[in-house]
Amino acid sequence: MDEKIENAVKLIKNSYQISVLSGAGISAESGIPTFRGEDGLWKNYRAEELATPQAFSKDPELVWEWYNWRRAIISSKKPNPAHYSCAKLEKIFNSKFTLITQNVDGFHRLAGAENVLEIHGNIFEVKCLKCNIIYEERSELDNKPLCRECDGRLRPNIVWFGESLDQNILTNVYDDLATTELLLIIGTSAVVYPAASFGALAKQNGAKILEINLTSTQNSQIADVSVQGKAGEVLPLIVDSL
Ligand code: BJW
Ligand code: ZN
Image 1 (cartoon, rainbow, N blue to C red):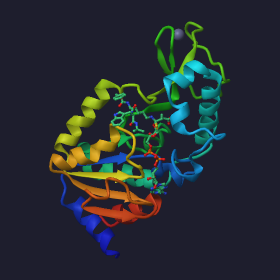
Image 2: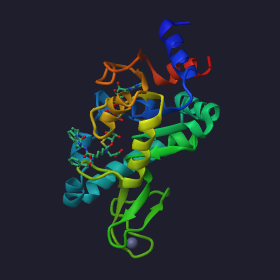
Image 3: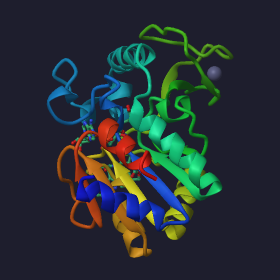
């Protein structure tokens, strides 16, 4: 076995409580475009230009067009071996396992994981700007969707730049990062805060860090083991050796 994989297996075996922080890279092999890098553009817009409350106020139909395009892609794809390996880890560690994801595609739950903290929301949920109701909406939407309760304007239930993350979810995240013994950081460029700081925080709190990514990131420097490769290939190798 590759030495890095062997070391990764050891890190997991030596832990009683583990956590995962995932980003867009874990869904890349499912065929979901990541945000940054070559496939991160949509009609020449960057995510930073569309995922803001200002962009939505200025041109809600454009922002909905982007989300409807992404909703359609995600609906037509499925979880990959990396998502299933995370669910397997939860089966092994039971209540001593937490999955923190920046992804809004819902693939971790679809693959069977239960203790999932979706810190940036879920693309299949909508929020009414008039009555504030949040509900799941999987059916196809037009670019000017209205609330089923009050006819108010809907937005995606997603955390945009400049918006606060849900306080209850954040409390759970920070509680977890205070006690976890190992944080697996999978497929995130670690440039968007606060998630970009979770690795360093866990490390300060005494956790070991295992990173899986195609390239190096700011987390590579603090990682105890950093494996460069595809999550859908590397993670099953590790988990199936436990
Ligand atoms: C693979 C792979 C394979 C590919 N296998 N790997 C402190 C300092 C500076 C700025 C701030 C700060 N605190 C807050 C801010 C402002 C801002 C921010 O961070 N800005 C930065 C850009 C500098 N943060 C916020 O506004 C957050 N709110 C907040 O903090 O509120 C309080 C506050 C507000 C204002 C000021 C101060 C405090 C909210 C952030 C919300 C982010 N939302 C988005 C879009 C909405 C979701 C959606 O529509 O889907 O979430 S942005 C977008 O980036 C999305 C992602 O979840 C997020 C992270 O991206 P991710 O997952 O890392 O993807 P990529 O594409 O960047 O990387 C993919 C990685 O995978 C790469 O590394 C590849 O190599 C790898 N890879 N294939 C393994 N097969
Ligand atoms: Zn409403």
